[in-house]
Image 1 (tube, rainbow, N blue to C red):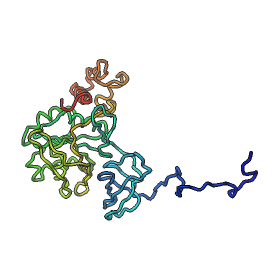
Image 2: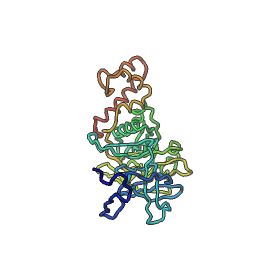
Image 3: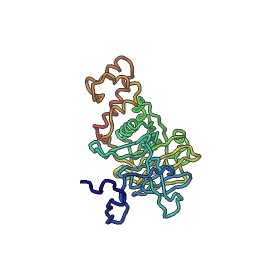
Image 4: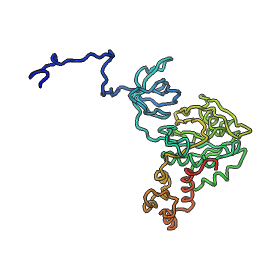
Length: 335
């Protein structure tokens, strides 16, 4: 039965009124081709501070982004009020593809990944040589996370006036990780900051470390005009107090690069890490995995890397270092 006859036109079609009085929903979304490009500097309780040209703009996620996260270091497209004036709010309508993502989980059994920073190309692992004591397992875990994310690691040792760095540096010698050693006197007179800057030129560097190691103090020395609050180490527990509560990206003087100060961490879960990605940080060992069994953990009896090293293709110490790092996923950080 034909409802509207042989030749219906638009006047014949019955349109039901919209009871809500609003426009009907559509799957077509604007492309926002005129959106401004911004860099996310910090995220605080849903408010996102972006750098657009030479001004900072406060924004929030647009509804069309859904559950997609926006993190420090993201390159985003922003629309709305871009003046940066007080009490104005723009909208982030698009997050550009990320070059890198540094992730961690709460522990090794937690499947929920947290993105620490996006688009960094270097990870500065800051640890004190004393007060508080260094935690090699945490350093190992940060190294694994850096290799997994494709970031170049940099080991920054502070408070060398309280302890000799030789023993700690020796344990990381076979990894070829770059390092810089500082003390409190150099930090006060600016010499430490100048030496660290040499490793940061032209890079976006995320600084991580547990509380009390002097991470934020070092960042303050690197970017003195943007000082952040610092704390002290508890004499009883030997732990620092969390004074940095959110990640913040800061430009180095003279446009020499970026530093991202992150909150102090007491754990660095590696549930998300795939051993197959970590091996790529060992170019002398990676070819030897071609004959490994499927889903090889690279630390089992029939791993092909043992034969690869026995044939002289790589230093045995390098294989030991790889397996030590991969084993951190099964070890607690305090062990």
